[in-house]
Length: 168
Image (cartoon, one colour):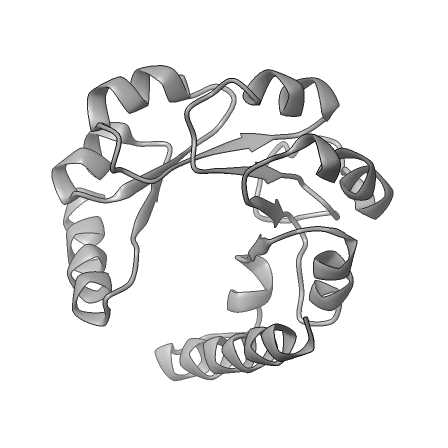
């Protein structure tokens, strides 16, 4: 896993993009990358102590209690989800839905990333409901058998988000 992450980190660095490693503070530290932590991972406070103030740290939440608890954490962004049904997790948490995103948004003072079941067809509604950003896995990879397919799908997402930026 480290070898693959190292190659990806090089590509991100060349592109001037931020690379965020999921769950693994140790790998993120070795690659000078950001890290995204889940509820069962190392605490954001411990990660911040290890990684320093300049490292991007994100933290997943799944409900109002976790959003409130995360208010005191030293993280750069919070993720909320799964917003919709998702097939990328073996045992996903219950879906949050748009109404709960709308209700919880005022409790979050940092950027809020919606995650879980985000597609090109529902992304606009997710942004309109209060998300600052979206995390996408399934819709990015669905039906993409070759690297060229993923590149085309990535371009579709970039076009969509560019259009969203002009609308806001």
